[in-house]
Length: 141
Image (cartoon, rainbow, N blue to C red; front, side, top):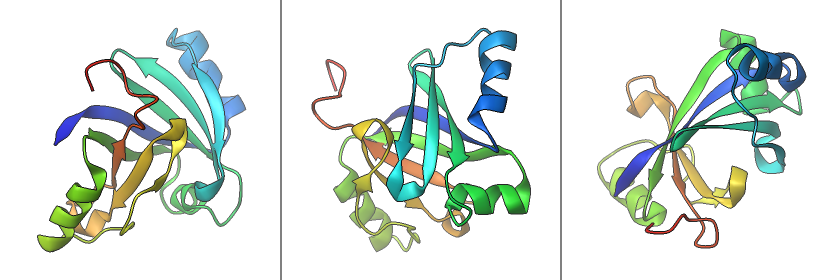
């Protein structure tokens, strides 16, 4: 059911300010930047082996990332787990009494379907569950 750690989301105030740290200092290449309107964010995607870092910049003051930065400052926002059947997993988790932020999958970055597990049910960690669309899935997944 769980395939791998897909990415680690890192909240940043500004992609333009944060990207030089990753590209120049760490020598990591940004694959692309995209906007995720539903989450009111711009996302910088940085491949790291089979996983990636996802830098998250708020595009609106009332976005979840803006609220996170206001309360906690920049830093790790969430851990994303790639799954093979998101709808079935949401159902299983809800049946087990796990509180979900999302009761059904929605569109996330990179064309994936996503849903978030509420941190109150996950030891204070915000987990994103992500299922790749068939068109974007690597061979064998």
